[in-house]
Length: 35
Image (cartoon, rainbow, N blue to C red; front, side, top):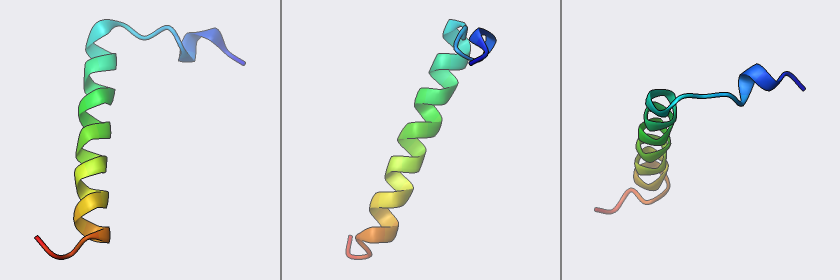
């Protein structure tokens, strides 16, 4: 495996965390249509 892929700086980690949170919200909304 290429180590460069795993050497992320703080900003990239924050961005990934935000994307993960958005994905989680979208999945929750899609799989639970009732509000």
